[in-house]
Image 1 (tube, one colour):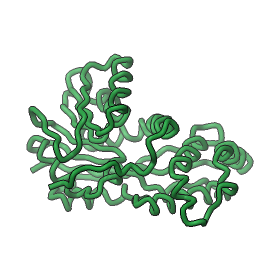
Image 2 (cartoon, rainbow, N blue to C red):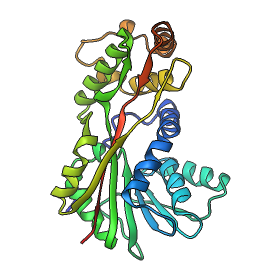
Image 3 (cartoon, rainbow, N blue to C red):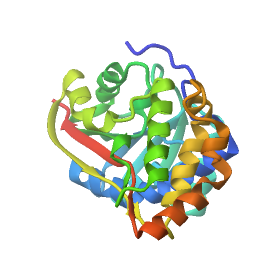
Length: 273
C-alpha cells in the first residue's frame, strides 16, 4: 500500500514557483516528448498523467496521442487543476480530463494504455510502492514510463564560475530538502523494484546560450529552493543575490562564449505483464 499523501512539495506553493514550472515545461517540452515517444506512447492511446500540475505534461501527451487518444491528468492541488483546465480549454484540446486525487485513493472507470509521470517520483515518500500500485491501472502490455532530472549534469562549457557555484547551491539545497538531485538515472531501478521488466532507458536535455531561457531557468530553480540553500550557512543571500542571478549568469556566459547545458531528463520505460 502507498502511504496517505502529504504535501511534500519542497519548492513552495508560490506564484513565482508556478511561473518557474511553466518556464520549465517550455524548456523541457521537446525533450520530454522525445522520451515519451521512445517509451512507446503513440496515437490513439489513453494515458494517465500522474502529478499533472498546471497541465503542461497532459497537454504535451494529448499532442502525442492525437484526437483518437485521451489523457487523464491527476493532481492533489485543486488550484493547479483549475489552471490546467483553463489552459487546456484555451488550447482547444478536448481529449484531456483532470481528476483531483492522491495516489492512495485514485480509481479509474477503465484501465489505461500508458502511465506517465514527469518530475513526480522525487516528491513521493515511497516511489517504488507508488509505481507498483499505479501500474495496476494499466492494461496488460501497457506502457509505464517516468522522467526525472539528473541535476548534477548541469554545467557550462567552457566552465564559468557562477554557473558552477549555482549548480552546487541547487544540488545541496535539493539534498537538504530531502530530494534526490539525480533520480533520473535511477528510474529504471525503481521500475524493476516495482516488479516491472524494463524495456529501455534514455536521457535528453536542453541547452542554450546567454540569450536563451537557461539563465532565467537557473535563477527560478534556485529561488524556489532558496530557504534550503541558505539553511546551513554555506551560502548567504548576498552571495547568491537571487534577483540578479539570471542577469549575471547571462553576462558570464556571453563573456566566455559558453554553452549552458541544463539538467537532463532521465527516463526509463517498461511494459505491464
